[in-house]
Image (tube, rainbow, N blue to C red; front, side):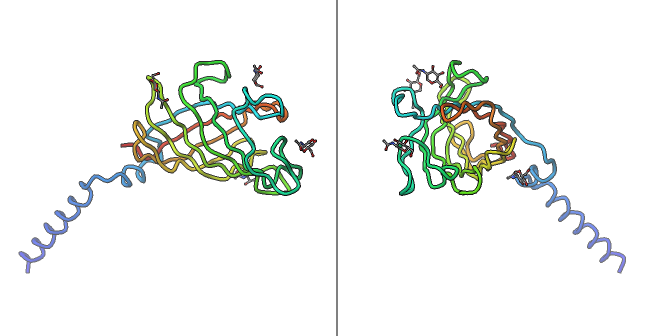
Amino acid sequence: MKLISTLLFFLLLISLTYSSATPTRSRKRDRVHEPCKRLVFYFHDIIYNGHNSKNATSAIVGTPAWGNRTILANQNHFGDLVVFDDPITLDNNLHSRPIGRAQGFYIYDKKEIFTAWLGFSFVFNSTQHKGSINFAGADPLMNKTRDISVIGGTGDFFMTRGVATLSTDSFEGEVYFRLRAEINLYECW
Ligand SMILES: *[C@@H]1O[C@H](CO)[C@@H](O)[C@H](O)[C@H]1NC(C)=O
Ligand SMILES: *[C@@H]1O[C@H](CO)[C@@H](O)[C@H](O)[C@H]1NC(C)=O
Ligand SMILES: *[C@@H]1O[C@H](CO)[C@@H](O)[C@H](O)[C@H]1NC(C)=O
Ligand SMILES: *[C@@H]1O[C@H](CO)[C@@H](O)[C@H](O)[C@H]1NC(C)=O
């Protein structure tokens, strides 16, 4: 009887050792709610105003029947779909050397308030970063900060996931806005 319980004890010990020694990504993530990488970038959106097609970095490509593609529709731009190709910089200066492009779209998706849905990528091509980070999520843009999901990545950001906190760093009417993105990655390979 003593032998059996001793054996059982050792079996239990072995199985415990085994499970805790199995390294998995999720374990690392669960144990510490600390990001494995933290990055801050700015991106700059120059809105089309009817005369700046050379300078604009975004274009209204879809609009409700009561709007047009020159200016954003009334009722908080509800129904407008905007495609963008914005420079990404390391500081908040539009004229700093871009280290990549933020490319994707936003859709204004509520009549009552300003709010949008974002789907885009950071496409890097610089000595600092190569590859891309993909983002998706709701952007209640009147809030000081908004969290959107980092749903994946390639290159330096292979298979990454995390959360990006966006804040509007500057807003000049319907001409220009700058977003600050603080990216916290919780899965790094
Ligand atoms: C392009 O747009 C930016 C932001 O509004 C502005 O600062 C800049 O002067 C514009 N450049 C040209 C050539 O219009
Ligand atoms: C677009 O709509 C705005 C606001 O209704 C109007 O002022 C502007 O003339 C329109 N532009 C075109 C090209 O239809
Ligand atoms: C990335 O940058 C290099 C060097 O400036 C350039 O030759 C290459 O065409 C760029 N690639 C893309 C996809 O922009
Ligand atoms: C935006 O702000 C409102 C009011 O402060 C808050 O109730 C809401 O949860 C916020 N939304 C997000 C997605 O942070």
